[in-house]
Length: 334
Image 1 (cartoon, rainbow, N blue to C red):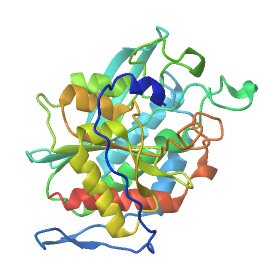
Image 2: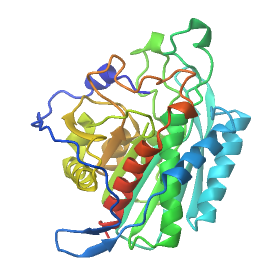
Image 3: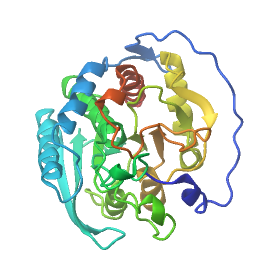
Image 4: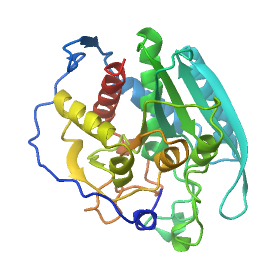
């Protein structure tokens, strides 16, 4: 995934936001919330067990590297799940050229709920796997594909569970779940800086060619690496730049629900992820909920881009915190 020092070159001036610390409260269930207008909103209960099973099912196909059988079969499975949950599904196929000239047969998968509603929210993640484990400590593993339990499958799993819940309890507004392909086919670690815009190819394509002409949404939330044990979600720099109000809303909601042990009140540097291109090209204010901290050696979670990004690293508690926070924000937006 995107190297932050490369991303920092793209940004020259940003306003530095103040950092506050907060105490970790006891995590509690909250399915009925009140907005500022004191309107009671019934929010579905997010099932971490179901999301966890969706990760298992994705991993059963093998690494979802573009141009492979596992990739094709998992894409078909995702389409069927969204259709099962009554989404209007659009498959956006494109031949995308990777940094090394490889032609990637990519497929963005979009599931739309309440497609006739003009007021819309964008939820997104990437569903492909990194083709090589270029951050693995064992040189013998550097050219092996990443299982991608956290870096890919976790975001998809959370959104599929949200889709399942929306099929049961209408959110009262339009919601588009966009699953981007070819996000993680960027330049290898030993070639960093040689290729511009080699990451997030699927979102670059979708932002330039949205599935609906003149597509727009009130805001967007990208989920990336949202399932690991010990996850830390900081306020990423591009998110703060492009969508400060959405950052504030999400982090305040997480705190209200008791998940500020995950959504920490701390700023972090820029990450070149799918949200960057959605913001830059479509101008939809979109944030990135991503397991990242400037204080870590690699920035991302310990098993990022290694062959150990497996189901053993996944935490149901992390999935629950992210899923319940996001679905609460969506339902309170109606």
